[in-house]
Image (cartoon, rainbow, N blue to C red):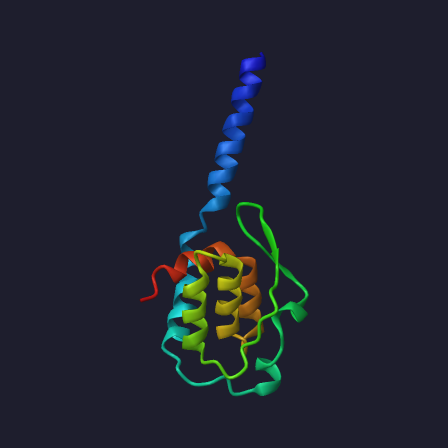
Length: 133
């Protein structure tokens, strides 16, 4: 009986972890489409009041599929282009994936629903960054 219980726990942990660590293909595609748009937008952020807002003032955290929860860093977009935001994200995707997600969110700062979607789908955002060239 004990072996069955241990085996059941191991299967649960393994399947739970693998499901949580891989984002849905549709989510990755959605993130990719929006990141690609931003990658091709070289114009500066034009609304200073929105672009000057610090991400930590949005008051939310980023929760990844592996269970890690990361608070927002003290980041501002200012006049940075959407392209530069994606470049900053790509520069941080290996060292600090939460910061990478914030930079992708910054590329969409004019679209609050999309920014929130990106905050709640950080694994898809990071996976899509690998497709941007």
